[in-house]
Length: 121
Image (cartoon, rainbow, N blue to C red):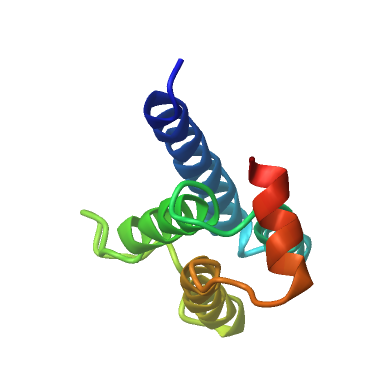
């Protein structure tokens, strides 16, 4: 199997992972423990995923896409994301997640970059 289909599959898996973690965070942000757990899971995943178009950015786009859909007004006239401190913290987390996805595109310099390049093969 060539690198193209594998990368696309990895990107799709990271996109789905980001959407799942983002959905759980949005649905549980009204509870203090839910928001904390969602932010912790998001941060741990962003740190664990290597940077690049196919991994960290795909995760971040999936996460923020769910947040974007959740911020639209529902048919009943209310919103899924509350307009209190936890809602604003959730929106700020979305900005940080998207920024972290794009920061992962910046190439690293020095010996760490050479080690990562050798590990990627």
